[in-house]
Image (cartoon, rainbow, N blue to C red; front, top):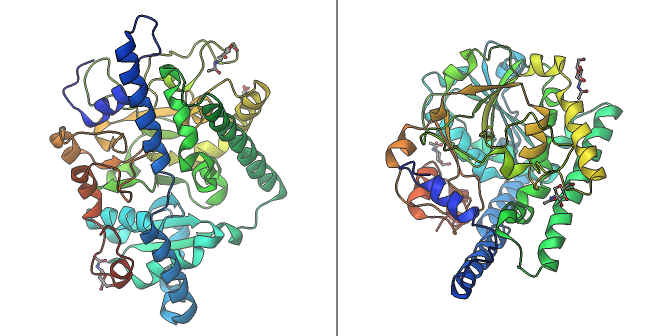
Length: 412
Ligand SMILES: *[C@@H]1O[C@H](CO)[C@@H](O)[C@H](O)[C@H]1NC(C)=O
Ligand SMILES: *[C@@H]1O[C@H](CO)[C@@H](O)[C@H](O)[C@H]1NC(C)=O
Ligand SMILES: *[C@@H]1O[C@H](CO)[C@@H](O)[C@H](O)[C@H]1NC(C)=O
């Protein structure tokens, strides 16, 4: 596999190390095992929330309590009607990370040809609600509209409540199953199971991360939304997303590669799903590229007409009943199954992913050309474990003149 472009591929070759092969010489085995160990520690490092981010949350929550400005209506009353107006371009973010949300939104607005057409909807958890609100109430963005909603403010039907609860329970069971296996095996796991490491990543257990399958319920009034993960940065105007023809499909996603033939921009189906299990549909091609999450355009009307959410639940139950042998831990595997046949491939330059894996400084042209860069992988740009060059593509959107960023010494 030679695609001439590296961050992602280097990353993949590190992540997908060859499996423990009896042919390997003793020395090579030791090197391999040391590499795996290091990789595991790297994943573990990603679990810690930096002090500066804690500080930011605390200071902003304080600000919310003492400063009426920080509690002012978001959006202001004169813009409330835009929240459900489908002539605007709606962007959804589910996150509990204020700094990450600020970068996603500033980078999108800065690069927008018509920022006044943008409406951002941030959904966050109860504990992050006041800091998130305080941030966006005191950092207004040109003419774009931002809404901040806490999950506690939703009044869902009993059916949705039960569904969300069940989904989380099963995801937690999956994560802890793999997590416990990692410990039991005392780091001595086969290379083919590298994706087990996802069980170590904080996103495995994150409610905000799994909630995306409920987007149609979270936004009953909207029909077309762009979904951005909080670990992305936007580099170009993305307004043409909303006029893309999805050909009757439900989600627009990068599937094909910018990296050449036989090379996937992310991973392959077989890297996520256990094709030895009889329940995994045999008509799926295990060598085809899995679509990328992180930056997607969704047709919510088509989604509501489909039974994708119930199919997703069906797959979760099958996973539970199979003793979690159907797929690797993570958000994507059950979505790959539930959304099969509903994905419309979009231009590969819409998203370049993998920036949170081991990377090099190569691939500059592609990095520049990409509309969205996605730091999926353990090295989130707000952590100190990633490469500084790649992180700077993200950190240039942090507002270092903001007094809270300064007080909390973010990225210092
Ligand atoms: C979804 O609905 C279609 C048509 O009603 C049906 O054929 C299919 O079996 C359903 N899939 C699931 C997973 O329920
Ligand atoms: C994949 O499925 C097969 C068949 O059920 C099972 O024996 C195997 O342990 C599974 N692999 C993983 C990694 O769970
Ligand atoms: C950065 O923060 C300062 C102080 O809060 C604010 O005045 C300025 O508008 C912000 N800049 C951007 C680009 O958001």
